Amino acid sequence: SLHNHAAPPSSELWGREKTHSAEQQLALLGWTGVPVSDRPATRLPQMPEASALVARRLDAAGVGDGQAFALIHPAAAFESKTWAASNFARVIEHLAARGLPAVVIAGPGEEGVVGAVRAETSAPLVTFTDLSLPEVTALSARARLFVGNDSGLAHIAAAVSTPQVVVFGSSNVAHWQPWTQVPAEVVREEMPCAPCPGYTCAEFDAPECIRRVPVERVLAAIERVLNAVTIHTSRSG
Image 1 (tube, one colour):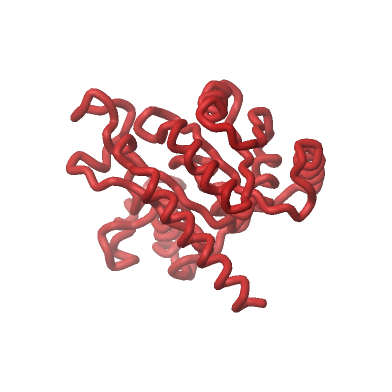
Image 2 (tube, helix red, strand yellow; image 1 turned 60 degrees about the vertical axis):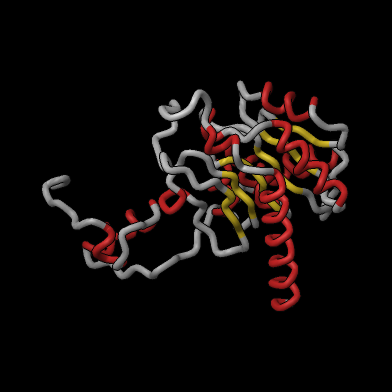
């Protein structure tokens, strides 16, 4: 029968207090006797139909097969996870100057976030707000780099091994940072009130944890990740 045994805390298996959400699930398997490694790779299959549709839509938008691009996700579940649209606009301009065009993605009902980013920059960008989950997965796998908020899309990008820079606000970084083995960085501001659930801000009039993350630190993280990707590619080649 289920739910009649109390599992030990995951910290007992891993030997440290702070554990990732994935490590907590792995600890349950380890407790039952299933061998678990310290960091198994994620695998998220791509559906051929979705990959073909994404390829056609990118091509129609001027992003040809094999052309590198950065996937930008400026939306999030709530305010304490949402970095400002103007900040994402600066990121897009930086990437454009680097020769890496932006594809901005959001979900249904988040069109306003995409519009806000577009209003803040004259840099060309491709936008999608109507993709299915398999199509989002295929698009993420095509991207050279993912830059976005702490969200489900960041985890999808991690699962398909896309290098990334993720901006964190209120969330517990140790528990929720993307689980990946490719170059990736989390950018956040240390706050005495963090982490917190993030639904509302109990300390300030607005969530300063996400507002205080400067563009310069995110741009620096992008450069480190892209440089690490270049080094990794040259060594593996």
